[in-house]
Amino acid sequence: MNTILETLKTKSIIGFLTLCVTAISFTSCSNDDDNPDPVNEEEIITTMNVTLSATGGTITLQSQDLDGEGPNAPVISVSGNLSANTTYNGSIQLLNETETPAEDITEEVEEEDEEHQFFFTASGALSGVEYDDEDGNGNPVGINFTLTTGDAGNGTLQA
Image 1 (cartoon, one colour):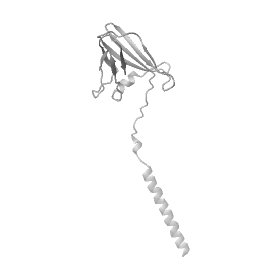
Image 2 (cartoon, rainbow, N blue to C red):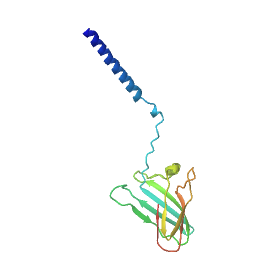
Image 3 (cartoon, rainbow, N blue to C red):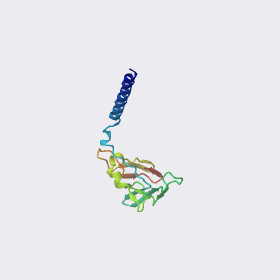
Image 4 (cartoon, rainbow, N blue to C red):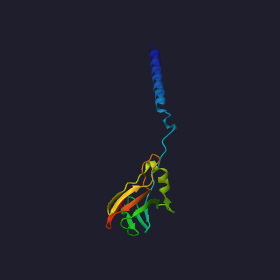
């Protein structure tokens, strides 16, 4: 009688373990990975070149930060002075200068325009910035823009 009872217990334990393994295999297997979201790696942008063109000439602005979040501050350079009461056509070029030759990131940002937007803050003698481009949803992007200056004076532009 003990052997029959032990056999029943063994069969019950084996049946229970089989049920557990079956339940685990059904819950651990899933088809959720059939269409994973594509990984969109972030671009490395070390340099932003801004070109401002008007009848009187072209001005370039550059912000370059080759060490990224390293200890060195970005180097800002300006090629000249803006003229008073003038409208400039502006464009932005983005570069990754950690590669040789430098990779132009601008085209990739244009292709992914629904995921990017430049925001501008103009102050002082700069009277305003208007977007000249938009994404497929009609939202502004800012790679192309117009900058308007007011009377002669000092001003800042942040992008």
